[in-house]
Structure formats: structure tokens, C-alpha cells
Image (tube, rainbow, N blue to C red; front, side):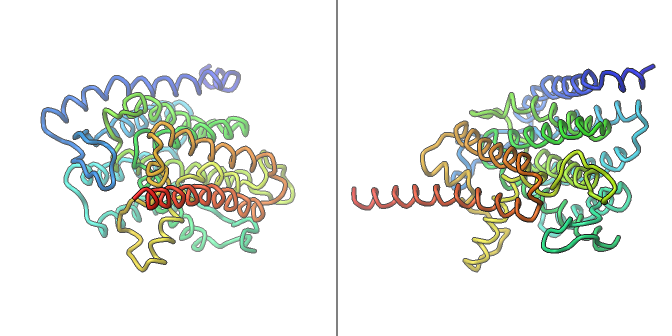
Length: 364
């Protein structure tokens, strides 16, 4: 009876899991804030890279991962979705890593090793693995090992990409909601119930968290939350690409799936690639933090965190809808188009910063 209900009215199912996940987070965060105040578990202010002037808890990610885990296990039991078990195991391991880093700190080698283990679990046991690059860079089918290694690199990259954009109130959470909702709607259109419910469960958890993280933030997601969002959206992106694989005998729900997946995650992808490139060109470690992220540059122009979030969401939506509208052009051309849009956006910021710097020099 329940299976029949899911088949006939899946939108009720999606709404229910989103709402349950949201409510679990909303009701749990006040307790986390209280515990943080009691035991002084704060994000110690670093005014060089952070805009907040007060000590604020970094444990908001606990509510995200707890809500997401509960909802995923609950609903996966109804539809016997075994792949969800590997995703949950990966999330729990990564949440442990994030929690330790948020409270005590973790060295880079330990972080990388655990992320490598988690990504390997997803790829080789959960089958979240790419089997083709669909003509991007002239590469089509790739073998099991090659696809596995590439997928592991992709997952680790997106893990850290979301962590890198978590620099101002509401940014990582808003981009996380946009990405998970977009994948959820895409999977719903494709009638892929299991992956749609994972996406909507994550979206609900982040939405509940965002109530407390919107400017001015009362709590931060920390590494715990950012890593879980990165991991799950990476897994969803891989499945979205694989399920829309064109074999010559099928009709995918979405063409140019790799480009669409990139467009959905364009903000963390572009910011991370840009920041790593700039640091390497300056002969600095790509892992050494600075104030050169896109959100920091917009902050230097005088934008408040809520306006910065709005601008990045507008950029994300422009790239996403443009890619979907032009999906028949092919992934290779569309990815170049995405790079072009981002470079124009970055160029506009650079010009404004240069003008601002010149005005300051004249005024002096």
C-alpha cells in the first residue's frame, strides 16, 4: 500500500521528507547553541578572514548530518534502497572528522586520508562512479579503475569546495539548498525516487539550519556541515550524470548532463579552481587560507553578507538555467560557456576593486 502511494503521489513523499528534515534541525539547533555556550565551544574570531566579531558555535553541522541521516535511514527502509547505507556510513565517518576539526583541529594529512577512505566507500561499494566523460576533453568511456579514481578525486574536490565557500553567513547553506533542490527536482522529473528523496532530505536539513545561519548568524555549520553537503552533492552529481548517460539506444531525460551538473555546482567549483590557480601562480601553497575568495572580494567592495549571497545565487541560477536551455549544444561547449560567464563575473569584480583602489589613492 505504501509503495503504491509513493508511486502515485511522489510529491507528497518529497514534501514530507523535506519538512521532517527541516523540523528536526530547527528544533535541535537551540540545544546545540546552549551546549556551546555552556562548554565554550566557539569559532574563535579571526578578523583577517572572518567578518563576525563575536564568538559563535561551529557545531551547526551536527544538526544537518543528524537530521539528514535520520530521514535517509527512515525513508530508505520503506523503499529498500541499499545504496543509501553506503552514503550514510560515509557521512558518519566524515562527520566525525569534521567534528574533531571544529572542536580541536585536524592536520591536513588526516583530513585527506579520511576523505580518501570515504570517497572510496562511495565509489567502490556504493557505486557512485562515473563510467564516461561523455566527450569532454575528447574522452568517452573509461575503465573501472580509471572511472573510480576520477570519481574519488571529484568527490574529494567537492568536499573541500563547499568548505572553502563557507566564509560568510548563509553562503554555503544557500548554495547547498540550491544545489540539492535542483538535483531533487531533476531526479523527480527522471522518476528516480531514491535519489530525489536524498536530495530533498539534504535540502530540508540545510533550510532548517539556514534559519539560524542567515546574516547575522547565530551558529555556523563548521567543517562537519560543509563536508557533508559537499559529499552528498558530489554523490548526487555523479548519479545524475550516470543516469543520463547517452548510449545511442536510449533517450536521456537531460542531455549534456556533465555540464548541467557543473552548472548546478558552479559557485564552489569556480571559486575553488580560481583560488587554487591564483595561489599556485603566486608560488604559494594552494591550501594556505587567504581573503581572495569571491565572497571576500565582494565584501571588500562593501557588500553585506546577505547581498553577497544574493549575487552568487543569481550567478548560479544564470549558469544553471542557461545550461539547461542550451543542453543540446553538448557538454564540451557548455562547460566553456560556464567558464566564460564566471570569468566575466570575476572580471567585473576585479575592475570595481581596481577603481576603488584608485579612488583611495587619489583621496590620500
